[in-house]
Image (cartoon, rainbow, N blue to C red; front, side, top):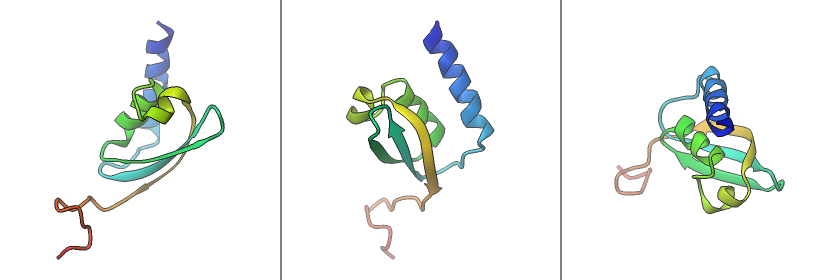
Length: 85
């Protein structure tokens, strides 16, 4: 039960931030003091995954404790080159 209530509290806080829709880069600070950076198309869902230990390998071992920063970015090109014309 605590995990469920923790999930709902975090979701409520994330929604109150009015996070952007679309691609973003983000920075987390983990419980061991390390940093984790990532990019995602759904920032709210990705932060929740990390908090539940379902994110990257590093955040599974060192759960994030601070959602420190994010910035919207252009969507990646289907060819993998954002500067392609």
